[in-house]
Length: 287
Length: 210
Image (cartoon, rainbow over all chains, first blue to last red; front, side, top):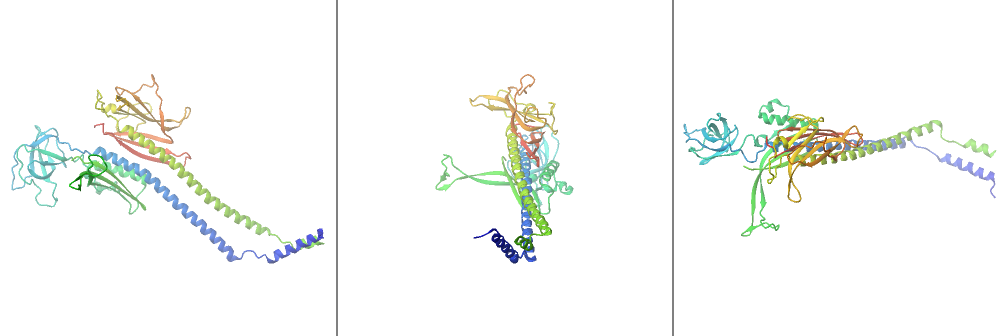
Protein backbone atom coordinates (compact mmCIF):
# COMPACT_ATOMS: atom_id res chain seq x y z
CA UNK A 1 0.00 0.00 0.00
CA UNK A 2 1.39 3.32 -1.04
CA UNK A 3 1.75 5.86 1.65
CA UNK A 4 2.18 9.57 1.41
CA UNK A 5 5.91 9.17 2.03
CA UNK A 6 6.30 6.66 -0.78
CA UNK A 7 4.74 9.10 -3.23
CA UNK A 8 7.20 11.79 -2.18
CA UNK A 9 10.15 9.44 -2.62
CA UNK A 10 8.97 8.50 -6.10
CA UNK A 11 8.61 12.21 -6.99
CA UNK A 12 12.15 12.99 -5.84
CA UNK A 13 13.52 10.13 -7.94
CA UNK A 14 11.68 11.35 -11.01
CA UNK A 15 13.01 14.89 -10.59
CA UNK A 16 16.52 13.62 -10.08
CA UNK A 17 16.32 11.52 -13.28
CA UNK A 18 14.85 14.40 -15.26
CA UNK A 19 17.64 16.83 -14.53
CA UNK A 20 20.21 14.06 -14.86
CA UNK A 21 19.39 13.69 -18.63
CA UNK A 22 18.49 17.30 -19.42
CA UNK A 23 21.06 18.86 -21.73
CA UNK A 24 19.62 22.18 -23.19
CA UNK A 25 20.54 23.70 -26.56
CA UNK A 26 24.06 23.63 -27.87
CA UNK A 27 25.47 26.83 -29.43
CA UNK A 28 25.23 25.30 -32.93
CA UNK A 29 21.55 24.48 -32.43
CA UNK A 30 20.87 27.97 -31.12
CA UNK A 31 22.64 29.62 -34.06
CA UNK A 32 20.86 27.34 -36.55
CA UNK A 33 17.48 28.20 -35.02
CA UNK A 34 18.27 31.93 -35.09
CA UNK A 35 19.46 31.72 -38.70
CA UNK A 36 16.28 29.95 -39.82
CA UNK A 37 14.22 32.59 -38.02
CA UNK A 38 16.25 35.40 -39.57
CA UNK A 39 15.93 33.90 -43.09
CA UNK A 40 12.17 33.57 -42.62
CA UNK A 41 11.93 37.21 -41.55
CA UNK A 42 14.06 38.36 -44.50
CA UNK A 43 11.98 36.31 -46.95
CA UNK A 44 8.76 37.74 -45.55
CA UNK A 45 10.10 41.29 -45.62
CA UNK A 46 11.34 40.90 -49.20
CA UNK A 47 8.00 39.53 -50.34
CA UNK A 48 6.24 42.33 -48.53
CA UNK A 49 8.49 44.95 -50.13
CA UNK A 50 8.04 43.42 -53.57
CA UNK A 51 4.28 43.38 -53.14
CA UNK A 52 4.34 47.02 -52.04
CA UNK A 53 6.43 47.95 -55.08
CA UNK A 54 4.10 46.19 -57.48
CA UNK A 55 1.07 47.74 -55.80
CA UNK A 56 2.60 51.20 -56.24
CA UNK A 57 3.32 50.48 -59.92
CA UNK A 58 -0.24 49.23 -60.37
CA UNK A 59 -1.58 52.46 -58.86
CA UNK A 60 0.59 54.49 -61.22
CA UNK A 61 -0.56 52.59 -64.30
CA UNK A 62 -4.16 52.80 -63.21
CA UNK A 63 -4.00 56.59 -63.20
CA UNK A 64 -1.81 56.70 -66.29
CA UNK A 65 -4.54 54.82 -68.16
CA UNK A 66 -6.88 57.75 -67.53
CA UNK A 67 -4.17 60.19 -68.61
CA UNK A 68 -3.72 58.19 -71.84
CA UNK A 69 -7.47 58.27 -72.35
CA UNK A 70 -7.26 62.05 -71.91
CA UNK A 71 -4.62 62.18 -74.67
CA UNK A 72 -6.87 60.16 -76.98
CA UNK A 73 -9.80 62.46 -76.23
CA UNK A 74 -7.72 65.52 -77.01
CA UNK A 75 -6.47 63.93 -80.23
CA UNK A 76 -10.14 63.44 -81.09
CA UNK A 77 -10.52 67.21 -80.96
CA UNK A 78 -7.44 67.66 -83.17
CA UNK A 79 -8.48 65.09 -85.72
CA UNK A 80 -10.64 66.05 -88.68
CA UNK A 81 -11.57 62.84 -90.51
CA UNK A 82 -12.97 64.79 -93.49
CA UNK A 83 -10.50 67.41 -94.67
CA UNK A 84 -11.75 70.96 -95.08
CA UNK A 85 -12.04 71.71 -98.82
CA UNK A 86 -11.95 75.52 -98.43
CA UNK A 87 -14.87 75.94 -100.80
CA UNK A 88 -14.79 74.41 -104.26
CA UNK A 89 -11.24 75.24 -105.39
CA UNK A 90 -10.04 74.96 -108.97
CA UNK A 91 -6.86 75.82 -110.85
CA UNK A 92 -7.18 79.49 -111.92
CA UNK A 93 -5.05 79.35 -115.04
CA UNK A 94 -2.83 76.91 -116.88
CA UNK A 95 0.43 76.44 -115.11
CA UNK A 96 3.41 77.64 -117.02
CA UNK A 97 6.44 75.45 -116.42
CA UNK A 98 9.76 77.14 -116.10
CA UNK A 99 12.42 74.66 -117.05
CA UNK A 100 10.05 71.84 -116.13
CA UNK A 101 9.97 72.69 -112.44
CA UNK A 102 6.65 74.37 -111.70
CA UNK A 103 6.15 74.70 -107.96
CA UNK A 104 3.73 77.61 -108.01
CA UNK A 105 0.04 77.40 -108.80
CA UNK A 106 -2.80 79.94 -108.60
CA UNK A 107 -6.00 78.56 -107.10
CA UNK A 108 -9.40 80.24 -107.26
CA UNK A 109 -12.89 79.75 -105.76
CA UNK A 110 -11.46 79.52 -102.26
CA UNK A 111 -13.68 80.49 -99.33
CA UNK A 112 -10.76 80.54 -96.90
CA UNK A 113 -7.01 80.26 -97.12
CA UNK A 114 -5.51 76.74 -97.12
CA UNK A 115 -2.71 76.26 -94.62
CA UNK A 116 0.92 75.37 -95.03
CA UNK A 117 1.19 71.60 -94.67
CA UNK A 118 -2.21 70.89 -96.28
CA UNK A 119 -2.15 68.26 -99.02
CA UNK A 120 -4.26 68.02 -102.16
CA UNK A 121 -4.57 66.32 -105.53
CA UNK A 122 -5.27 68.08 -108.84
CA UNK A 123 -7.54 66.53 -111.45
CA UNK A 124 -5.44 65.47 -114.42
CA UNK A 125 -2.10 65.82 -112.63
CA UNK A 126 -0.45 62.75 -111.11
CA UNK A 127 0.74 62.88 -107.50
CA UNK A 128 -0.19 64.50 -104.20
CA UNK A 129 1.07 67.99 -103.32
CA UNK A 130 1.85 69.72 -100.06
CA UNK A 131 1.62 73.47 -99.58
CA UNK A 132 4.93 74.97 -98.46
CA UNK A 133 3.88 78.65 -98.73
CA UNK A 134 0.80 80.67 -99.67
CA UNK A 135 -0.20 84.24 -100.45
CA UNK A 136 -3.07 86.05 -98.75
CA UNK A 137 -6.54 85.43 -100.13
CA UNK A 138 -7.55 87.99 -102.76
CA UNK A 139 -10.74 87.69 -104.86
CA UNK A 140 -11.02 84.06 -103.70
CA UNK A 141 -7.56 83.45 -105.13
CA UNK A 142 -4.23 82.48 -103.61
CA UNK A 143 -0.89 81.51 -105.08
CA UNK A 144 0.34 78.33 -103.51
CA UNK A 145 3.90 77.10 -103.50
CA UNK A 146 3.83 73.33 -103.49
CA UNK A 147 6.00 70.25 -103.53
CA UNK A 148 5.21 66.64 -104.21
CA UNK A 149 4.48 64.72 -101.04
CA UNK A 150 3.97 61.22 -102.42
CA UNK A 151 7.61 60.73 -103.37
CA UNK A 152 10.71 60.76 -101.17
CA UNK A 153 11.88 64.23 -100.15
CA UNK A 154 15.35 63.37 -101.36
CA UNK A 155 14.30 63.31 -105.04
CA UNK A 156 15.74 66.25 -107.00
CA UNK A 157 12.45 67.22 -108.63
CA UNK A 158 9.44 67.68 -106.35
CA UNK A 159 7.53 70.00 -108.67
CA UNK A 160 4.25 69.32 -110.51
CA UNK A 161 4.37 66.02 -112.36
CA UNK A 162 2.63 67.66 -115.33
CA UNK A 163 0.97 70.94 -116.18
CA UNK A 164 -2.35 71.72 -114.56
CA UNK A 165 -5.04 73.22 -116.77
CA UNK A 166 -7.46 76.01 -115.87
CA UNK A 167 -10.55 74.91 -113.89
CA UNK A 168 -9.04 71.54 -112.96
CA UNK A 169 -10.57 70.58 -109.61
CA UNK A 170 -8.50 70.44 -106.40
CA UNK A 171 -9.36 67.94 -103.69
CA UNK A 172 -7.75 68.35 -100.28
CA UNK A 173 -6.80 64.99 -98.84
CA UNK A 174 -5.30 66.20 -95.56
CA UNK A 175 -5.41 69.35 -93.45
CA UNK A 176 -2.25 70.17 -91.52
CA UNK A 177 -4.35 71.08 -88.49
CA UNK A 178 -6.72 68.15 -88.71
CA UNK A 179 -4.14 65.44 -89.24
CA UNK A 180 -2.63 63.21 -86.60
CA UNK A 181 0.39 62.50 -88.79
CA UNK A 182 2.52 65.31 -87.27
CA UNK A 183 2.10 63.55 -83.91
CA UNK A 184 3.79 60.39 -85.19
CA UNK A 185 6.78 59.32 -83.07
CA UNK A 186 6.09 61.97 -80.45
CA UNK A 187 8.37 61.23 -77.51
CA UNK A 188 6.38 62.22 -74.43
CA UNK A 189 9.48 61.88 -72.26
CA UNK A 190 11.03 64.89 -74.03
CA UNK A 191 8.48 67.45 -72.93
CA UNK A 192 11.22 69.56 -71.36
CA UNK A 193 13.81 68.97 -74.08
CA UNK A 194 14.12 72.32 -75.92
CA UNK A 195 16.16 71.10 -78.93
CA UNK A 196 13.56 68.35 -79.48
CA UNK A 197 10.66 70.78 -79.09
CA UNK A 198 12.28 73.14 -81.61
CA UNK A 199 11.69 70.48 -84.28
CA UNK A 200 7.92 70.49 -83.69
CA UNK A 201 5.12 72.93 -84.52
CA UNK A 202 3.79 75.16 -81.75
CA UNK A 203 0.46 73.29 -81.43
CA UNK A 204 2.25 70.00 -80.97
CA UNK A 205 4.67 71.52 -78.46
CA UNK A 206 1.71 72.80 -76.41
CA UNK A 207 0.19 69.33 -76.31
CA UNK A 208 3.56 67.65 -75.72
CA UNK A 209 4.22 69.82 -72.66
CA UNK A 210 0.76 69.17 -71.29
CA UNK A 211 0.73 65.41 -71.89
CA UNK A 212 4.33 64.88 -70.87
CA UNK A 213 3.79 66.73 -67.62
CA UNK A 214 0.56 64.84 -66.99
CA UNK A 215 2.21 61.43 -67.43
CA UNK A 216 5.10 62.55 -65.29
CA UNK A 217 2.69 63.51 -62.51
CA UNK A 218 1.02 60.12 -62.59
CA UNK A 219 3.92 57.81 -63.38
CA UNK A 220 6.73 59.73 -61.73
CA UNK A 221 10.17 60.47 -63.08
CA UNK A 222 11.23 58.21 -65.91
CA UNK A 223 14.26 56.02 -65.36
CA UNK A 224 16.78 54.95 -67.96
CA UNK A 225 15.11 52.58 -70.44
CA UNK A 226 11.60 53.84 -69.74
CA UNK A 227 9.43 54.77 -72.71
CA UNK A 228 6.45 57.05 -73.32
CA UNK A 229 5.90 57.15 -77.05
CA UNK A 230 3.00 58.15 -79.28
CA UNK A 231 2.88 56.61 -82.76
CA UNK A 232 0.44 57.19 -85.60
CA UNK A 233 -0.08 54.68 -88.42
CA UNK A 234 -2.64 53.95 -91.07
CA UNK A 235 -3.90 50.42 -90.73
CA UNK A 236 -6.01 48.51 -93.20
CA UNK A 237 -8.49 46.09 -91.75
CA UNK A 238 -10.21 43.44 -93.86
CA UNK A 239 -13.79 43.08 -92.72
CA UNK A 240 -15.72 40.00 -93.90
CA UNK A 241 -18.82 40.83 -95.98
CA UNK A 242 -22.01 39.41 -94.52
CA UNK A 243 -24.93 41.21 -96.17
CA UNK A 244 -27.66 38.84 -95.00
CA UNK A 245 -26.25 38.84 -91.47
CA UNK A 246 -26.27 35.03 -91.17
CA UNK A 247 -22.84 34.91 -89.56
CA UNK A 248 -21.30 33.38 -92.69
CA UNK A 249 -18.95 35.38 -94.89
CA UNK A 250 -20.50 36.04 -98.30
CA UNK A 251 -18.77 34.38 -101.22
CA UNK A 252 -18.48 35.01 -104.92
CA UNK A 253 -17.53 31.94 -106.95
CA UNK A 254 -16.55 30.20 -103.73
CA UNK A 255 -14.20 32.99 -102.59
CA UNK A 256 -14.81 34.78 -99.27
CA UNK A 257 -15.49 38.48 -99.76
CA UNK A 258 -13.89 41.21 -97.68
CA UNK A 259 -13.97 44.98 -97.67
CA UNK A 260 -10.86 46.90 -96.74
CA UNK A 261 -11.24 49.78 -94.31
CA UNK A 262 -8.34 52.12 -93.59
CA UNK A 263 -8.19 53.65 -90.15
CA UNK A 264 -5.74 55.92 -88.45
CA UNK A 265 -4.31 54.04 -85.50
CA UNK A 266 -2.74 55.86 -82.57
CA UNK A 267 -0.56 53.76 -80.27
CA UNK A 268 0.77 55.02 -76.96
CA UNK A 269 3.44 52.79 -75.44
CA UNK A 270 4.38 53.26 -71.82
CA UNK A 271 7.27 51.35 -70.31
CA UNK A 272 7.89 52.00 -66.66
CA UNK A 273 10.34 49.87 -64.76
CA UNK A 274 9.57 46.27 -65.75
CA UNK A 275 6.03 46.87 -66.97
CA UNK A 276 5.10 47.78 -70.54
CA UNK A 277 1.56 48.76 -71.47
CA UNK A 278 0.35 49.50 -74.99
CA UNK A 279 -2.77 51.62 -75.48
CA UNK A 280 -4.43 51.86 -78.90
CA UNK A 281 -7.28 53.75 -80.46
CA UNK A 282 -8.55 53.77 -84.02
CA UNK A 283 -9.74 56.98 -85.65
CA UNK A 284 -12.04 56.69 -88.65
CA UNK A 285 -10.13 57.66 -91.74
CA UNK A 286 -12.29 59.93 -93.86
CA UNK A 287 -9.75 60.97 -96.45
CA UNK B 1 13.57 14.48 5.94
CA UNK B 2 12.22 13.41 2.53
CA UNK B 3 11.15 17.00 1.87
CA UNK B 4 14.68 18.23 2.58
CA UNK B 5 16.17 15.77 0.06
CA UNK B 6 13.73 16.87 -2.68
CA UNK B 7 14.61 20.55 -2.25
CA UNK B 8 18.32 19.76 -2.32
CA UNK B 9 18.08 18.16 -5.83
CA UNK B 10 15.52 20.56 -7.29
CA UNK B 11 16.95 22.85 -9.92
CA UNK B 12 14.75 25.26 -12.06
CA UNK B 13 15.68 28.05 -14.46
CA UNK B 14 17.97 30.74 -13.25
CA UNK B 15 16.81 34.39 -13.38
CA UNK B 16 19.15 35.09 -16.31
CA UNK B 17 17.72 32.14 -18.26
CA UNK B 18 14.18 33.22 -17.55
CA UNK B 19 14.91 36.78 -18.66
CA UNK B 20 16.60 35.56 -21.82
CA UNK B 21 13.62 33.35 -22.60
CA UNK B 22 11.26 36.29 -22.11
CA UNK B 23 13.38 38.57 -24.30
CA UNK B 24 13.68 35.98 -27.08
CA UNK B 25 9.95 35.18 -27.03
CA UNK B 26 9.16 38.89 -27.10
CA UNK B 27 11.39 39.38 -30.16
CA UNK B 28 9.89 36.36 -31.94
CA UNK B 29 6.32 37.37 -31.14
CA UNK B 30 7.04 41.02 -31.98
CA UNK B 31 8.48 40.06 -35.33
CA UNK B 32 5.54 37.77 -36.07
CA UNK B 33 3.11 40.54 -35.15
CA UNK B 34 5.04 43.06 -37.25
CA UNK B 35 4.85 40.79 -40.29
CA UNK B 36 1.19 40.03 -39.71
CA UNK B 37 0.38 43.69 -39.19
CA UNK B 38 2.22 44.66 -42.35
CA UNK B 39 0.32 42.14 -44.43
CA UNK B 40 -2.92 43.22 -42.82
CA UNK B 41 -2.25 46.90 -43.58
CA UNK B 42 -1.34 46.10 -47.17
CA UNK B 43 -4.52 44.08 -47.54
CA UNK B 44 -6.68 46.87 -46.11
CA UNK B 45 -4.91 49.48 -48.25
CA UNK B 46 -5.46 47.44 -51.40
CA UNK B 47 -9.08 46.95 -50.45
CA UNK B 48 -9.57 50.69 -49.91
CA UNK B 49 -7.71 51.43 -53.10
CA UNK B 50 -10.08 49.15 -54.99
CA UNK B 51 -12.98 51.12 -53.54
CA UNK B 52 -11.41 54.38 -54.75
CA UNK B 53 -10.66 52.94 -58.18
CA UNK B 54 -14.22 51.76 -58.52
CA UNK B 55 -15.66 55.12 -57.49
CA UNK B 56 -13.27 57.00 -59.80
CA UNK B 57 -14.02 54.72 -62.73
CA UNK B 58 -17.75 55.10 -62.32
CA UNK B 59 -17.51 58.88 -61.80
CA UNK B 60 -15.32 59.43 -64.88
CA UNK B 61 -17.46 57.10 -67.00
CA UNK B 62 -20.60 58.93 -65.94
CA UNK B 63 -19.10 62.39 -66.53
CA UNK B 64 -17.80 61.44 -69.97
CA UNK B 65 -21.02 59.72 -71.02
CA UNK B 66 -23.24 62.66 -70.04
CA UNK B 67 -21.02 65.56 -71.03
CA UNK B 68 -19.73 64.28 -74.37
CA UNK B 69 -23.25 64.59 -75.68
CA UNK B 70 -23.41 68.32 -74.85
CA UNK B 71 -24.88 70.30 -77.73
CA UNK B 72 -26.43 67.28 -79.46
CA UNK B 73 -29.44 68.40 -81.43
CA UNK B 74 -31.91 65.74 -82.54
CA UNK B 75 -32.77 65.90 -86.24
CA UNK B 76 -36.45 66.43 -85.36
CA UNK B 77 -35.80 69.16 -82.78
CA UNK B 78 -37.23 72.55 -83.74
CA UNK B 79 -34.39 74.77 -82.57
CA UNK B 80 -30.61 74.79 -82.41
CA UNK B 81 -28.52 74.46 -79.26
CA UNK B 82 -25.99 77.26 -79.29
CA UNK B 83 -22.42 76.52 -78.22
CA UNK B 84 -22.85 78.98 -75.36
CA UNK B 85 -25.79 76.95 -74.03
CA UNK B 86 -24.40 73.53 -74.85
CA UNK B 87 -21.88 73.57 -72.04
CA UNK B 88 -21.67 76.02 -69.13
CA UNK B 89 -19.30 76.15 -66.20
CA UNK B 90 -19.72 77.87 -62.84
CA UNK B 91 -17.86 78.37 -59.60
CA UNK B 92 -19.35 77.71 -56.16
CA UNK B 93 -20.97 81.16 -56.17
CA UNK B 94 -22.65 80.46 -59.52
CA UNK B 95 -20.42 82.84 -61.44
CA UNK B 96 -19.80 81.79 -65.02
CA UNK B 97 -16.30 80.47 -65.67
CA UNK B 98 -14.50 81.11 -68.95
CA UNK B 99 -12.24 78.77 -70.95
CA UNK B 100 -9.03 77.68 -69.27
CA UNK B 101 -10.21 78.36 -65.70
CA UNK B 102 -11.22 75.92 -62.99
CA UNK B 103 -14.94 75.46 -62.40
CA UNK B 104 -16.88 73.61 -59.69
CA UNK B 105 -20.13 72.94 -61.52
CA UNK B 106 -20.88 71.95 -65.09
CA UNK B 107 -24.14 71.99 -67.06
CA UNK B 108 -24.68 70.38 -70.44
CA UNK B 109 -27.72 70.79 -72.68
CA UNK B 110 -28.72 68.15 -75.26
CA UNK B 111 -31.68 66.47 -76.95
CA UNK B 112 -32.95 63.13 -75.80
CA UNK B 113 -35.45 60.82 -77.43
CA UNK B 114 -37.96 59.55 -74.88
CA UNK B 115 -39.35 56.03 -74.89
CA UNK B 116 -42.54 57.25 -76.58
CA UNK B 117 -40.51 58.71 -79.46
CA UNK B 118 -40.89 62.36 -78.47
CA UNK B 119 -37.86 64.60 -78.37
CA UNK B 120 -37.04 66.31 -75.10
CA UNK B 121 -34.32 68.86 -74.55
CA UNK B 122 -32.59 68.21 -71.25
CA UNK B 123 -29.94 69.59 -68.95
CA UNK B 124 -27.55 67.50 -66.92
CA UNK B 125 -25.51 69.08 -64.14
CA UNK B 126 -22.63 67.84 -61.99
CA UNK B 127 -21.04 69.19 -58.81
CA UNK B 128 -19.73 67.84 -55.52
CA UNK B 129 -21.78 68.13 -52.35
CA UNK B 130 -22.01 66.83 -48.81
CA UNK B 131 -22.98 63.24 -48.09
CA UNK B 132 -25.58 64.20 -45.48
CA UNK B 133 -27.15 67.48 -44.41
CA UNK B 134 -25.04 68.91 -41.63
CA UNK B 135 -21.76 67.64 -43.11
CA UNK B 136 -19.23 70.35 -43.78
CA UNK B 137 -16.98 68.50 -46.19
CA UNK B 138 -18.12 67.98 -49.77
CA UNK B 139 -17.17 64.44 -50.70
CA UNK B 140 -19.90 63.16 -53.00
CA UNK B 141 -20.13 63.76 -56.75
CA UNK B 142 -23.76 64.50 -57.52
CA UNK B 143 -25.77 64.97 -60.67
CA UNK B 144 -29.25 66.04 -61.63
CA UNK B 145 -31.05 65.88 -64.95
CA UNK B 146 -34.16 67.81 -65.90
CA UNK B 147 -36.21 68.97 -68.90
CA UNK B 148 -35.50 72.43 -70.29
CA UNK B 149 -36.89 73.38 -73.69
CA UNK B 150 -34.66 76.41 -74.14
CA UNK B 151 -31.61 75.09 -72.28
CA UNK B 152 -32.59 77.42 -69.46
CA UNK B 153 -30.96 76.47 -66.19
CA UNK B 154 -33.23 75.68 -63.27
CA UNK B 155 -33.74 78.47 -60.77
CA UNK B 156 -33.29 76.71 -57.45
CA UNK B 157 -34.68 79.70 -55.58
CA UNK B 158 -38.04 79.05 -57.24
CA UNK B 159 -38.04 75.31 -57.90
CA UNK B 160 -35.45 73.40 -55.93
CA UNK B 161 -34.45 70.21 -57.72
CA UNK B 162 -32.72 67.40 -55.89
CA UNK B 163 -29.27 66.04 -56.70
CA UNK B 164 -28.50 62.33 -56.90
CA UNK B 165 -25.22 60.87 -55.65
CA UNK B 166 -22.94 59.41 -58.34
CA UNK B 167 -19.72 58.55 -56.52
CA UNK B 168 -18.22 59.02 -53.06
CA UNK B 169 -14.85 59.74 -51.43
CA UNK B 170 -14.17 62.91 -53.44
CA UNK B 171 -11.63 65.38 -52.14
CA UNK B 172 -11.41 67.62 -55.20
CA UNK B 173 -13.49 68.09 -58.34
CA UNK B 174 -12.47 70.73 -60.86
CA UNK B 175 -13.52 71.05 -64.48
CA UNK B 176 -11.81 73.10 -67.13
CA UNK B 177 -13.04 73.78 -70.65
CA UNK B 178 -10.78 74.47 -73.59
CA UNK B 179 -12.79 74.85 -76.79
CA UNK B 180 -14.59 71.53 -77.23
CA UNK B 181 -12.58 69.60 -74.66
CA UNK B 182 -13.51 69.24 -71.01
CA UNK B 183 -10.73 68.33 -68.59
CA UNK B 184 -11.54 66.79 -65.22
CA UNK B 185 -9.09 67.14 -62.37
CA UNK B 186 -10.26 64.98 -59.51
CA UNK B 187 -8.88 63.62 -56.24
CA UNK B 188 -10.33 60.85 -54.16
CA UNK B 189 -9.40 59.89 -50.61
CA UNK B 190 -9.77 56.32 -49.42
CA UNK B 191 -12.08 55.46 -46.50
CA UNK B 192 -9.11 54.82 -44.25
CA UNK B 193 -7.64 58.19 -45.21
CA UNK B 194 -4.38 56.53 -46.19
CA UNK B 195 -4.30 57.17 -49.93
CA UNK B 196 -5.18 60.21 -51.98
CA UNK B 197 -5.42 59.39 -55.66
CA UNK B 198 -5.37 62.04 -58.38
CA UNK B 199 -7.02 61.36 -61.71
CA UNK B 200 -7.08 63.41 -64.90
CA UNK B 201 -9.59 62.64 -67.60
CA UNK B 202 -11.15 64.43 -70.53
CA UNK B 203 -14.29 64.44 -72.64
CA UNK B 204 -14.34 65.56 -76.26
CA UNK B 205 -17.68 67.17 -77.08
CA UNK B 206 -18.09 66.48 -80.79
CA UNK B 207 -21.39 68.38 -81.02
CA UNK B 208 -19.84 71.61 -79.83
CA UNK B 209 -18.01 73.45 -82.58
CA UNK B 210 -15.33 76.03 -81.95
